[in-house]
Length: 153
Image 1 (cartoon, rainbow, N blue to C red):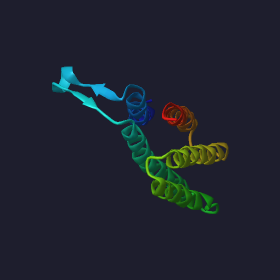
Image 2: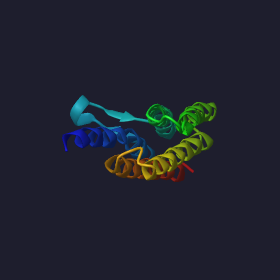
Image 3: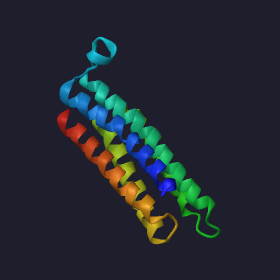
């Protein structure tokens, strides 16, 4: 039980920058007066910037998970390829930095990573709790990014 609680907590905490970006897109500011003594205002562009840069980092991290799956396989090395594809999508998305196209590329990368994890789960390469966690976290992230795109249109 302890082994799965820490990754769950860290994963859900890892979705918070996407939710913060969404809050900034909706409100255009964060009122931190009671904590820091002032209100911080952001241009809506900042919400894209936060979501895009963090999303690119997380997509590359998800690629690292695929790399780890490949390291544990003696015959099937397809996850090495997927890991590189995810990292390259994240990198190429930055050429359209903080834009509709860039955020869309990140969304597609999250969906690809989830599809690959689905495949890995059905081949018993990842545990059930991890697959469930990936589904939930990916839904939070993808829905947050889609809402971000809709709000900023």
